[in-house]
Length: 590
Image (cartoon, rainbow, N blue to C red):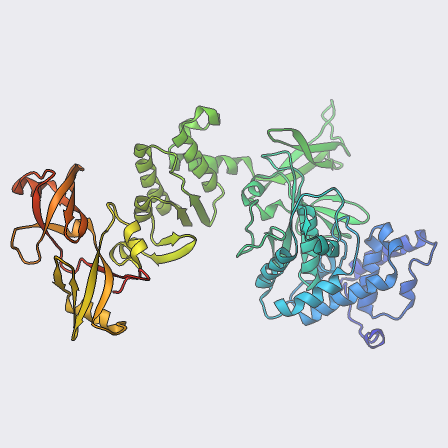
């Protein structure tokens, strides 16, 4: 294989100046390390690409890596990197720079090196080869989740294959493992750290992957349906620094934090929030610039004052760090506060806010991040009735003012009906129906949805559905209702045979009317309880076919006379008001 590739004159590094710089760094290193035949692998035949890749690795890898592993180990890894580039469909679109710095290097952190690139490639290639690059990143992360889960460990970083064996790792080990897996199939990937969160005295590591010209982030071994989504979205958008160490001399678009002879540390905060430069100028007592002064950028969280970055001033006494601009922060906070009517509370501490005010602040924290999707999990649950009604109206206005999708979780059907364009009704984790509020109310998919939506809930009673030719009749001890022709036509489409079917019938309280004795379709009942609700009265009635609740306008009662417990009344159903449900499955038959 190696002899055949000797005729390949393709360069790994097409830019002559960059190629010369790498060669110079390599030769300087080789001239320093003269003991032990550490560079013997370069004596065997290699193609130009192989040799340039090996030269690049040896120029910048840690000294221990050169001493601990034979050259053949690195050459095999180089060949597998080229193999992935050749066989994976995205291999031809990955730019030279991204391939060189984010696919070719073996080391990710301070883990022991192993044969994971070869092992992972053979296991993953058939799983991702027919996917887009975007979907391949998601699929690799699913695979990583199948192998490794989060468990705190010690400061040592296990190798990728060791993580497979133990099946666990902390975030630094999960991200090392995931980067190795992505690189094995030719996907540029890098491990990203935040030195300290703004909200707690801890750090975190995750992964970024290059897809079609853009870097996306993902939680390592924490699969999501899309990229740029993880539990850390919110804290990352408020973080002071997100950084990564890039193998070799890297000249990408990101802000360079620090350069060493072996790696380039870059700031990737642009991937998490809008940013601006925070410029710092250091002068002496006479106002003259101070060169090479150490400037520490610190984050102040509830527990500590922590240095996230140290930089040196240039000849003009200046240095800088990218961060979200103060005026942008202020604009977003003010805008969200005005929408939620909490501008007057901005200077208060949380303990000085009421429950409702705290709830609005929580919603404001979501608004300032300008997300495409808002997920609200019962945001009004802790509010009193008056404020809940007010906030419900505010949320309806908010939906019209903010261009975004709202996913709103609630047990309150009033919130669901008034706030939703579409409702997903779930029971025990299973979706029962997805439809508009009106469709869910008028055409419930099953008896659970029918009983769940509507206050008071739908009245249910046992009945028989009797077929006679092309017609259907709902029969009970006290009722015999012929169904409308259009309803009969729908029933006939899915009729499973027989003349009689046991069903559960249902009718909503607002579709039951008071009737006169002897009126066609009138049912007799006895009033048990009445509840005055203002403009309507809820009348609880016992009839031969079961218990019923009627919603009667007060003006109708004024004409007929007030009802009290023990009164005998007659009532009837509105035309086409009866819902029919299968007795066993509970499904709506119409």
